Image 1: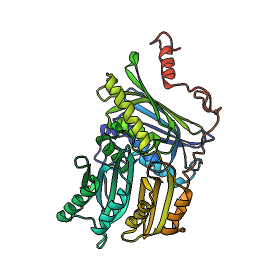
Image 2: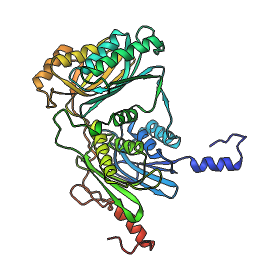
Image 3: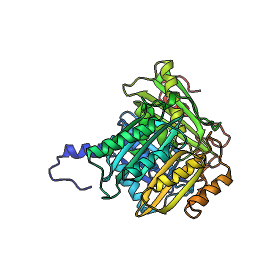
Image 4: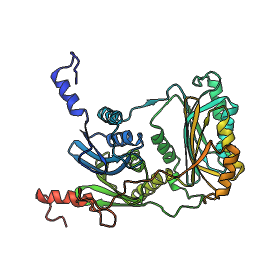
Length: 442
């Protein structure tokens, strides 16, 4: 590390102490790449670290988080979506650089685009109406994410003027966009809760979607569509002797699961002091030892129930219901309006969408069900493909979580695939016992 000539020795020491130390090891585990991060404990630092890994679409199959005083140690076992260890040096270098320079709470620019933030009551065909309005107002959607949960929809879209290719800055044009989108979102019965907002800079897109749906209190609403029957199980108990609230989450494993849970805990102003994350088969087991930012544990039954509801919602928002359809075709004005109108005309409900562009190509992913949340008839999917273009619209399965292993001999502390999970609580209590701070740890 090269130092500026104006830095004194004390400033250099502070920089060394506050800069995260990152080690990436492919030799420790035969199944995964191990990423270790040592850093000063700061609120949101864990979320930033997890965000770096999940933004690369890496699977976090196992993790240990521990706080010793004012210092954090995070250990992540990661693979790519095919279950392989990381071997690309450019990816490894990017992780080292990004984790070594993480800064909690930073704002990201919109890369010369205008950001549209939308919230409202979900209904069949709503997305096609939104895209039709944007096309009519000469807005080109460059990137977007759309989530639905418990009858609510939230979206963050990045648009530009389709004629000039520039961000939309004219205040009158922005007012027209907001007004027309608000009318679409409120429909006939959502006058109060339909919201639109335009900005030039936002926080991390997926984190912002969690914040929007949390503010919309989607966790309090009843599901409109038929539930999948595999709801996450969340429990919260207090470890009174040590002043922690212990949160356990058990659910179906998927990519970005850890990010979604840590994001919600962070935005609810809780700090994670210790945690273990494990996967077995297609199941995930997450345990967190948390306190409020003021150092206190959860103190009431209503608060405990709220944490349970919010974490269940955090897991469910990104749970991919329905058939995954991938659209890859040359981009053009009105493409999204046409495609989603075809979905609507054939009774397909879009439960989640990811819109992106690369050069002059549109790369879009839609998750669709029938009108009540049931799987779509394959014949109907094939009919829709014929109308949109069989070569352009592909039916894709979800990426397999290949990493799910039997009980690993390399790590005897945690059993998987039918063995009982040894909680972090037992490990912490054992250490306290050996230090003579408690009488037993059984």
